Length: 218
Image 1 (cartoon, rainbow, N blue to C red):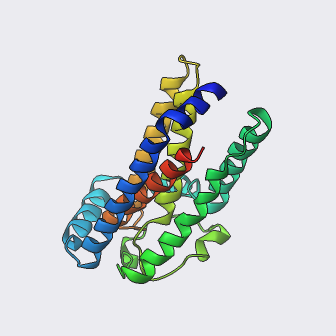
Image 2 (tube, one colour; image 1 turned 120 degrees about the horizontal axis):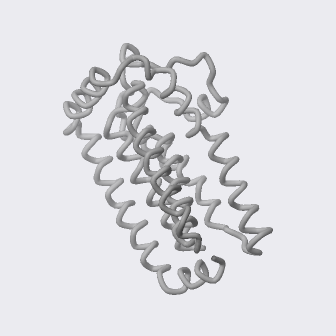
């Protein structure tokens, strides 16, 4: 697996950096569209539709799911990835430190785009517990979803390492599992009334952009 990753870095480094730049441009364009309120109606209708289609019995499961995308959990998993690369593969994955840029772009977006967060009557988060990081980047604005950006960043990295693994038998299972996790997290952020659809899309694009750049620097 190590040789495969090294070959990828030599042959396809530009490809991942290019993907990062394209996604960065898409993130910027979507931010402009959101700032101009062009898709406010779409955001509202998508949230209303999801909350009307999904049973309230899923409030609690989705609330637990949303904890997995917290800063604390994400950093823990990234630390495991870093140590695995360092001690097992004898490589220092410096690209992981680009994770911090998610917070920079998240704060910049929320302080510049000014997209109001969903009203409280949409909120369905059903746990009395929040990780401390929930109060670290806290504004009245919601674009982009830092939660979705972190989750996507992590998923893209995991997909990359799984894809490069030579164990073909387990590969489909883990890739499908990660895909389902992405979809469920995407839906949960809207269903729980935490973010608008555009916030979640923007966060996903941001996560792909930063993760692709991280892989390009591997």
